[in-house]
Image (cartoon, rainbow, N blue to C red; front, top):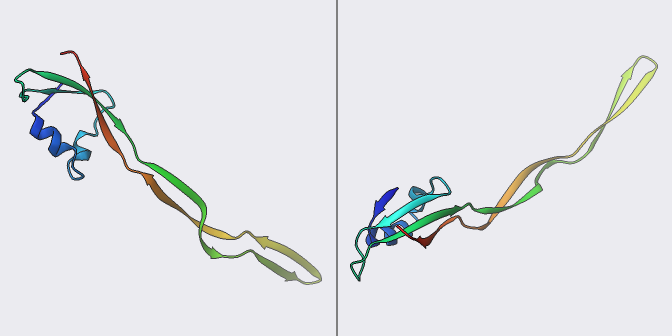
Length: 102
């Protein structure tokens, strides 16, 4: 169980400190000081980023036909087109804190 205060929670929600909370999916957090002076407990759940994958992202070369000649024999072959897979982030990762009993 990790002990943090309200200021640490707000700092953790910033973009720079978000990976620090990205531990196990069932991490628990305890807030020592609150505005009302009561102790609060939270269970943090990490949600990873979502990506859209494009298998035909960047085309390197198109389909090709090859012909090999060996004496009186001709062999016709085909090379498939070549692509580099790309992906686009459609949803950022985040940590959700749910209040629980201590």
